[in-house]
Length: 234
Image (cartoon, rainbow, N blue to C red):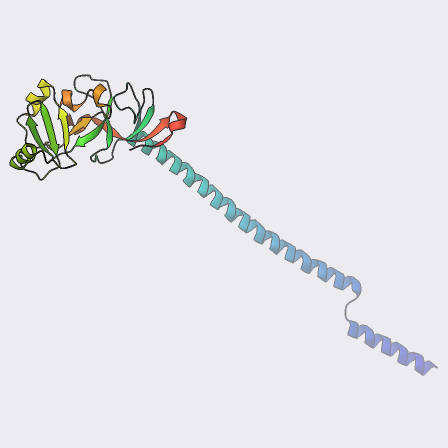
């Protein structure tokens, strides 16, 4: 009996050695290991939160700077114009609000606003028909405007034969404009011939002569009022 008890105790002791630490020890080690993992996870999350927050702050700053740049660009390059009268009807109506681009290069048939020399402080809106280099031919009280590249002799022959290019602009001139333009063969550099779309009710180059580039305030490209006619114009 005693030998059996000794063998049983020896076997139990061996089992204890095989099993290793007791349950409380294993639980403690698991808790420590789990705590370390949680701390590492929190550090990882905290790191990325800081990165995201910093990126968000940088993005907000860039958007703010872009907004400031757009505001300055708009103020420097654009201005508003209110249509006064019916000289551009039906394209524009009295009281409509337009947006003009100051730095845009002027092309034929562009609509521009300018300050007339005869009325400082005023602003007219007209369409460009003659650009630098275009040929001018005056007969009686009429001006014939041809795109550059046609000689005076060719023009006289075409008028005599009544065979004018489709692009020819023919307008009646006031006596003052006839005197101003009589010596010209071509439209000089940095000057333009402008007309209103409503020819019967427009004060334009037929009466006030050519417009200097320095008089032009900008090219009209947008109508922002009234809202039912809101949009780009040409």
